[in-house]
Amino acid sequence: MVNQKINCTKCIYYYITWDSSFPKGCKVYGFKSLNSPSILVKQSSGISCGKFTPK
Image (cartoon, rainbow, N blue to C red; front, side, top):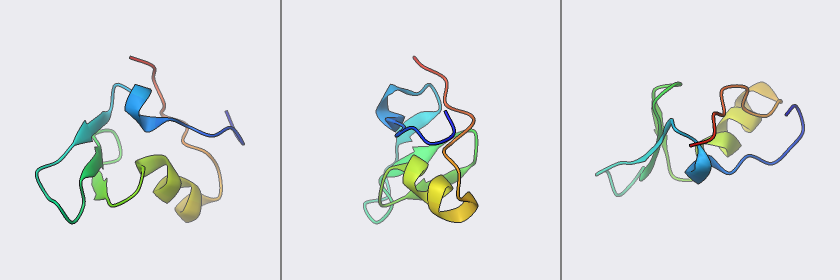
């Protein structure tokens, strides 16, 4: 999955937060984001999320 687009909503680690500024979260990486968490992972590391686990 190195260069594939990840759909976080289909991952077991994805969750919706109560924080309206950062409504999308990732339990495995432990952060909240305005955009899809996989986008933040890609921007930070340069590679697609390696922890994606389908529901």
